[in-house]
Image (cartoon, rainbow, N blue to C red; front, side, top):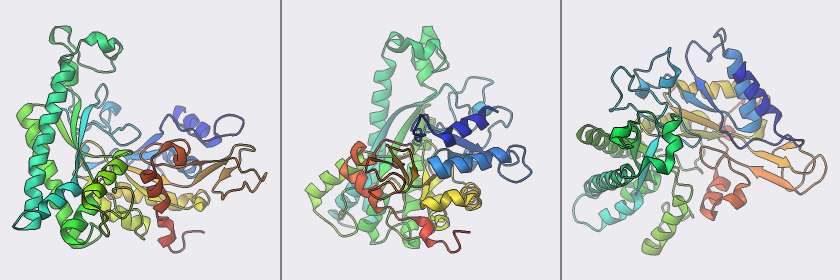
Length: 412
């Protein structure tokens, strides 16, 4: 009943103009036998969630049956995959209390991230003699270790603080496991320390002249991700801390890193022609492909991340008239073992009459030019993206290909 009413409010919108709610981020947990297929007891809620997504972008969809979360307790929702709106989630807790399921998510959070700028390493690798890809992998291995050292330094500094600096975190159970005699380390050790990355597609172009949409590029991408995964697993065991692989959203970093890259290396075709680096392991946004093709490609890499990633597809505004298609796409992503999935549809609102749909410069109902353009720029929603984000991220949004354009018989 609570879920139904939350979704109904989302569909209705807020205030007299029925505006799309930006926060809180809606996330629908998909589970086999519960809500994914006709006959499941909560299938009606899944359909209602799809209706809300088509009109309001929320909810996103998280895969409770994701293979990397194996060992969760079906009878304990605290162990299900859950995520903050952007993408961050907690993997298995190496410091789980005796008798506690290591997959418990409640009372835990991400302590600190460090992101590695992959294209810079690829350019440095070109300056060395020998095999380019081998040089890159050696440089990357070194940077992963440096990222680990940075995270441990941050962690130790945080653990040296007094619990009085954020008493409510412990008194109200926001951070579980706190023992006064041990200090805040007793709670912080359950959180995650994550190593992120930016610009896989551009890196592959530098190294090989292709990206991960090409089979040769995908093989190299998997080799890179295997190194991230292997090292984080080693760090987790050695330091008894929850190191994880993170696919960085890079809301600002995509632009600031590209500015620095151009200052050092100039404009390189297929690498630095735009004002942004591609988000983590995502397919470049301008690539023409169907939603299913994009899912097929990115699902080969999302399994390497145990600390946060998102896959999304871009649809046109007519999706609200075809919930069956939305259901097919979401279920396809879940069946491909995508952990966290979002569907992007244009969401423009006339701030004078409240009409919501995709618009040009003029509201088709009242003729107003006072239009709010809401887009999912990362995992969560923001206000008008043309003012809320830097020009790199704005350019990325403008360049996003509508994957529904590559579908035949999309509209019924």
